[in-house]
Length: 90
Image (cartoon, rainbow, N blue to C red; front, side):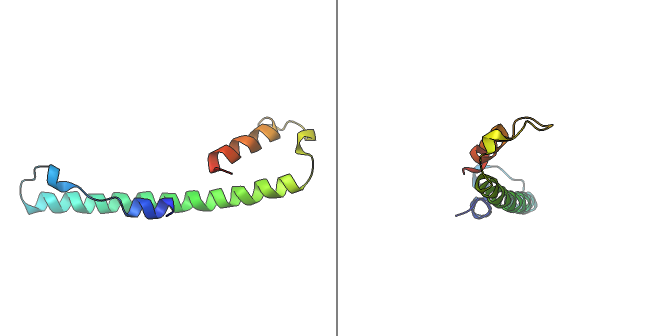
């Protein structure tokens, strides 16, 4: 299951809390639902960015010997590639 699916399946556990009537319970449940949906939308964006980064790193690696590339304004290209691959599990 991807991160979006895991977030959407986070269970609500309101029974351990004390509520002053059904209005508070409903507010809790609606808040839980809304937070879960917002987090899942962020996860979808992450999945899309990670997929793009995987394609980019694969294309760069196919381009040849990247160790010979110069340092760019943001630092070493090779170090940036390695860090990106660690972040996305590539």
